[in-house]
Length: 247
Image (spheres, rainbow, N blue to C red):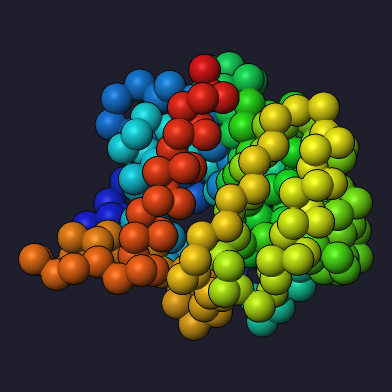
C-alpha cells in the first residue's frame, strides 16, 4: 500500500467467535479518539488506492475502520465469494475487535461494495449494528453463491438501519429490480433507504469493483462530470447516514 492515503493503514488480528483462529484486519484509525467504528467489507484481497482513499475519508470523519480479510481461509489464487457462517464469523470478529477498542456496540456500522455490499446487508440481518450501507450490491433476485440469499428475500429481516446506493446505469442492478427491492425493504422493522444515482455504471476495471470514487477537485478548475457529481452526492449520503445512526 503506497501513497498519501495509505499511511495510517495497519494490520491487526481479531479472534473468531469460536477462538479457532484469527482473522487478519486492515485497520485505519482517525487521528483523534474515534466516535464509532465501521466493519468494512471488501470483495478483493487488495485494497486499491481509490478504496483506501474513501476509507481514509471515513477515518478523517472520526470512524475507526476494521476491514476483515474475507479470503484468509482460501489459497492465494482463489477468491470464492464468502457467505454463510464464514462471513458471519469474520464480520463478528471484526465487530468484536472494534468493541474491544472501547467502541459502543450501537456505534459500530457495516459497509460493503458490490458482492461485499450484498454481504453487508446479509450481515445486518444477523446482528443489530448501528447502521449498514451497501454500495452497488448485486444478487437482488438471485443468490450470489452458497450461503447467500437474494436481497429480495433478505431485506425484510434487517435488524439494522440500511442504506442501499445504486447506479441507474449499472446493468447488475436494473431499475426494476431496485424498485422491487425498495418495496421489499418496506417490510423491515428498521429504517431503510434505497437511492439510485444517474451516471453510475458498474466498473469492474476501476480497482475495487464499483465506481471511481475520486475527488471532483483532482483537476483544478475542471467542471465535474455527471459521474463525479453523482459520486460526491453518494458519498455525502453515506456520511449523513452514519451521522444519523451511529451515535
